[in-house]
Amino acid sequence: MKSGVVVFPGSNCDFDSYQAVKTINAGEVVYLWHADTSLKGVDVVILPGGFSYGDYLRSGAIARFSPIMKSVVSFAKKGGTVIGICNGFQILLEAGLLPGAMRKNLGMRFVCNDVYLKIENFNSRFTRKCPRDKTLKIPIAHAEGNYFADDKTLKELTETNRIVFRYCNKNGNVTDNANPNGAQDNIAGIINSDGNVLGMMPHPERASEMILGSEDGRFIFESIVEETNK
Amino acid sequence: MRKFAAKIEVKFKPGVLDPQGETIKHALLNLDYTDVESVKTGKLFWVELESESIASARKTVKELSDRLLANPVIEDFEVEIV
Image (spheres, rainbow over the protein chains, first blue to last red):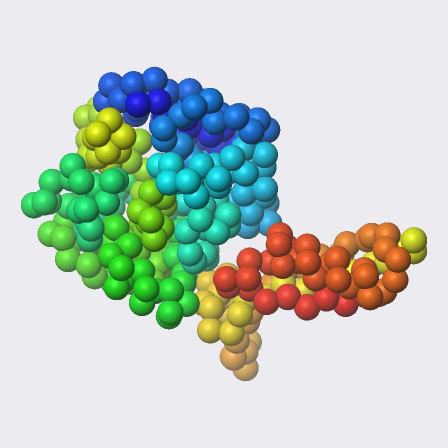
């Protein structure tokens, strides 16, 4: 498997993502510069967290028009695996690869904390290797993760099992108290209708070694590896 | 080609929660402006452009607003050519 981590001006989790892929021995990993158009033959594209283009206008709004994104969009439309983390999720929403939009967090705070995730769909290529009997402990770090979609979209996402992660408490209960940002229905991550594009606000790359406090993020990368090497 | 200036107002669609507006409203209430019922935030853009006519200028500005300045999922916009 060959992975590519896109680097936008203002990305700051690009190296963490690179490191996470290396840590789990997932094969070759390269950086993809925002001003280039070549995806260098990668099997998986990672849009990392950070503040692309300074979050000017709206998070992700400028990045989605960068040259590399044209290639990412056509790669995704052909079924290529794309994972957008945090700012990467915001870029996927702006690019229309995933439905909905992000609003500022309820409470207006930048929230940087560990959260617990309930996995709602174990059949996706991003979650297949996740343990069935526990929640995932993975940190979030964002000011705009308050997911919004209109009622019709929400219904469709729910009915087609495309809400992959919801914020929950330690025991796996999806409650208002466990919702860190006001996101509708505690949504932390969704996939597209073909199941090859995932957007998630929590940072699995920051939870891929015990020295970082959790290894739960590895399940997501390992699921992708299994799917790609199938 | 003539020069035009456009003013574009971007605001949240009705029903979309505006946490910034809510926070500002609370601050105003804390300042004893107890008559304040609601606060909504928005964005204002001024764009200068060259175009054939006022109609073509309006068309261009509407298009660029829809593509970039506003996110149609949560925001509406109004264009005024001045």
